[in-house]
Image 1 (cartoon, rainbow, N blue to C red):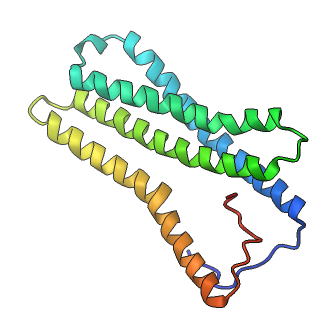
Image 2 (image 1 turned 90 degrees about the vertical axis):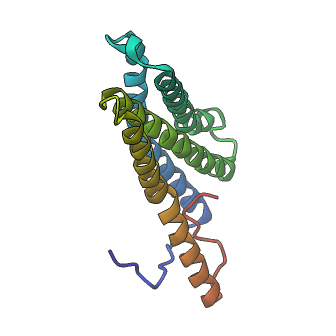
Image 3 (image 1 turned 60 degrees about the vertical axis):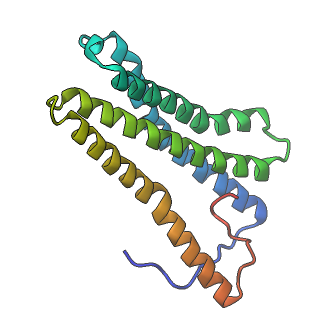
Length: 181
């Protein structure tokens, strides 16, 4: 994948840019919240399934971490929609975009924790007893590393590179900030 070295400025008004940014954020949340809801629903059924009584103390801690992580992610991903409805037509779109962006990042952190804990719980429960600890630690490390890299580190590095390029060009006016800060 190549990166276009020349930033293209959109021919849009500030109002149009805010509308676009909000719609892009909300569309991203629609995708994320579906995954969170599936995970959360699965976690809500786990204690009622056969065999949950065999889950040991560390497995139950992992379950609670996964459950509360999914609940927090759900809250974070859904919050911007309700705030938009309550603050509709009050001229608060820049505030809503900044909040939605923060909620999205917090929700992604919570989701990463929930996915990591869920996958680790499953591996710990299914792995042979003598390999359970090593398999659980390896699962947690790999899942957390993948979430960290793809969701946070890689975009952060890209952002730092883009900010450096903009500063080098003397073109950092902040007018086309798609991140919704």
